[in-house]
Image 1 (cartoon, one colour):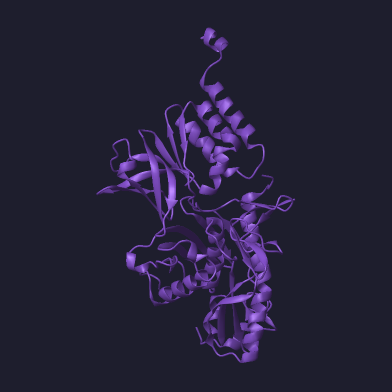
Image 2: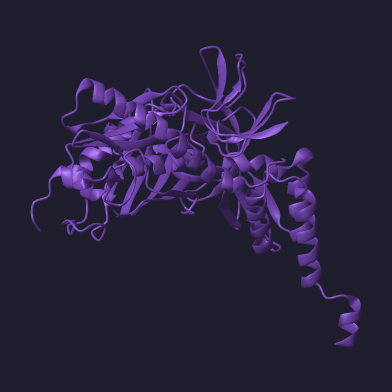
Length: 212
Length: 242
């Protein structure tokens, strides 16, 4: 059975190793708000921060370039760096980049590789805990967003999303709807309806066109 | 006004506002009231109206305030210039606000998993819009909800409440007039999971036995306060079937 768990609530009376939990006196407690499924022993956080893992995609904004390193603002407790030899495109301060996490070094700096400069568009900031729902299982939600709005969408696991072209206002609206309703099932269908309905409104039917 | 004495504050076993000695004022909390904050909450505790917001973790600035081994909690408690009958005309921190900010940051330093964010700071803002006694306790209770909503990992959701003494009677959750004329005032913050005290201050005089009873009263009241806190958080996620 799934139930809402608040920070400090006991998950299990035995020690298990799950993310967003702590073990005290042989018992496992949640540290963030989330949903616990006791059949699968899985804990899905509803709120939470981003912890970098190797090979994750992130979106960031170049803050500073000095000597052979670019500093990247990842809107997180960690500062990102790109070593300039890894950068194929020319990068200047203020550029939005998509990059992959190479490692988190001992000083709490995220080393990024394979940067790609994203030209134009806009950047949204959402809570990192909602990002898996924006992507969807097997990337379905992100593809649906992209197809329904004709926008290019790049999603960073750090909670930053880049949108460019097409109906970015509709895409923004859909993303905020996903963040609000992330914990309610049937979300992909609802977003599909929203995007489908809106695109039908935007493009008048052939009959309507003939009458005009 | 003639000088009040503490005995005037209790008439036939009832307090001036009609409450029993062990009765809380009405409390209501609403979570997520500030869009730009990581987590936020608004509390109405009796006549107190307090808003709280949490930001971070972000790089500790100025650098020397950071700790390379763990995060730093920076708390800012302030009363709005229009919040009470007393003189609060000068905006910003006064001696009292500095003290309350310090003890509040110590309460939250005990429950946040600070070691996960070395070199960073977590900012907790508590703004009293209307004050009527017990604002530090109400502020901590409100900020705890804001912190839970922020997604910052914490060990527990603490609550705070004050217990005072009028004559020989211990009273729970004193309002402003009781606060001014009572014989003692003991604000406390408690982690409900293990009953740990993270704040214990005392104005006035209590015996050891009275202090033990005061802590017991606070723990008992905490069951109600914790339930209100949890309901405020749960309301944000009405339907759970993800």
